[in-house]
Length: 281
Ligand SMILES: CC(=O)CC(=O)SCCNC(=O)CCNC(=O)[C@H](O)C(C)(C)COP(=O)(O)OP(=O)(O)OC[C@H]1O[C@@H](n2cnc3c(N)ncnc32)[C@H](O)[C@@H]1OP(=O)(O)O
Ligand SMILES: NC(=O)C1=CN([C@@H]2O[C@H](COP(=O)(O)OP(=O)(O)OC[C@H]3O[C@@H](n4cnc5c(N)ncnc54)[C@H](OP(=O)(O)O)[C@@H]3O)[C@@H](O)[C@H]2O)C=CC1
Image (cartoon, rainbow, N blue to C red; front, side, top):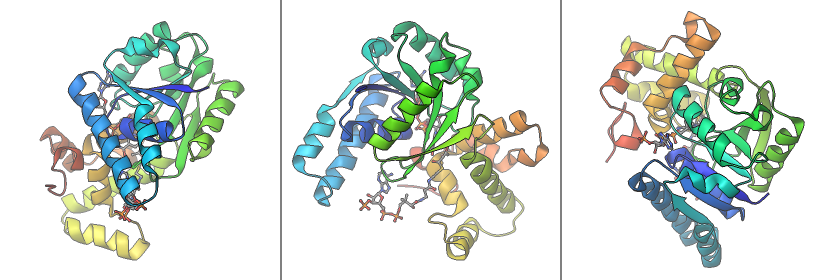
């Protein structure tokens, strides 16, 4: 297995493409238009340049990584891939449409993985004729730094698919941890209600955003406060995840905070577009 495609060149897709290319895989990085895919590639160029300047990698490693990546807006480039990792927006309809197309384009042997944060793998797999080859590969942000990949098995995911994906995860220097297919898996079932509660505390005027973040950083040794982390993840992604937890688990304790929804409706999506709870240059 050596040829990978990453669909969606946003913050996650670019990071996934980078770590796969650094591990020696050939990667096709796809997004819906050239500006988006070029932005993703530029992010990788910047990351590997920083790593080389810090002496973490050699100039040759930097060049090889970049040479291992091909950018495209054509999903048909998936026709010779062994593994596709989808990292488009957190919307079931969008992801199902991508999976339907990939099912037609890629060889029957290709594994179709998704980096979804919360959506059911089993339902996504039903959009294909190969549910045994569909699996969740949930990377953490920022991908080049975070060690974990949550591996989620759908109802029909085969042992062979699971073992192959586990091996690739290890080859790219990450630690796979297996979970079953429930909304939000483990990572976001635990993390996102904390973030949502921090937004409720802000909405209710319990403390300022700075105080909330400071308390969780200094008091609990979290590297980022929950509101800073929400901005880092993307407020749209946080809202989608809360909606999936709310619908999927059917418990009002997961209801998204209205202030979170308000910010997303205002177009304040966090660090990625310059404004969320905080303002970024
Ligand atoms: C929503 C989901 O579905 C799941 C999720 O991903 S939830 C989010 C999970 N992620 C987290 O919780 C991240 C929490 N934050 C952190 O761990 C840290 O703040 C952090 C690693 C992001 C930055 O760490 P820091 O010590 O404050 O900053 P800094 O010293 O600048 O960076 C540490 C290293 O990370 C690298 N780094 C930081 N941000 C980076 C980025 N966006 N991309 C690539 N590398 C990055 C730096 O280059 C540096 O590398 P070296 O050690 O090789 O020098
Ligand atoms: N942010 C995080 O911390 C984490 C996110 N995830 C998951 O990763 C996925 C991507 O998130 P993230 O990278 O943060 O989001 P981004 O918004 O940064 O990137 C998503 C990218 O996919 C593009 N896109 C939209 N539709 C399609 C399509 N049909 N085909 C190909 N590309 C498409 C988007 O374009 P456009 O700009 O037009 O929307 C955008 O460029 C989501 O499923 C998310 O839940 C997983 C772990 C952590």
